[in-house]
Amino acid sequence: EAGVAQSPRYKIIEKRQSVAFWCNPISGHATLYWYQQILGQGPKLLIQFQNNGVVDDSQLPKDRFSAERLKGVDSTLKIQPAKLEDSAVYLCASSVMGVLFTEQFFGPGTRLTVL
Amino acid sequence: KNEVEQSPQNLTAQEGEFITINCSYSVGISALHWLQQHPGGGIVSLFMLSSGKKKHGRLIATINIQEKHSSLHITASHPRDSAVYICAVLNSGGSNYKLTFGKGTLLTVNP
Image (cartoon, rainbow over all chains, first blue to last red; front, side, top):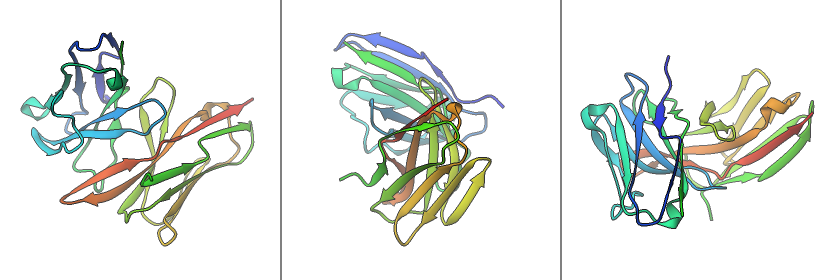
């Protein structure tokens, strides 16, 4: 079974630039999550999709971050404009259904460095 | 104060040693996860438990709901066990359940 795919794996940009990350979840997984993991911290949920609808985006900085999940499959996370404090690993995860009973499968992450 | 606290933050052991990583939480939970994260790699789920004890190979996870505490044990540790181990709790935030993660414990096992 193919895992969660993410690209790019690494990205270096200057502050105020824009960046986009892509995630392809495991086939058949209805729920998709984007997490931000700052160095030395645990992951923090940014947004959770159920199919193509948003379940939770309470911790997404909506003035600069946006995410979409077209057709309930792939998802993109965008930052515009980036700030220094956005430097982190952005993890995508998916699960068969909601988080309550099922295991989340994580992608390898995208390491973002903002200079 | 974080809802999920792990200890120790860093742990160095010799190959073959018995390892214990602790997790304490301050909220009511539905379940607790133990995850493993290798440097530069993604996160792998090790256990999800809501009571008692689970065992998988050399890994054992226990949880005490009354004391709001969980432990992850590694028996006969090996250098390939070197990774960050993360505790995450599943709790209800309004109408949605979400995972809240600890900061992780960096384990280094030397040969």
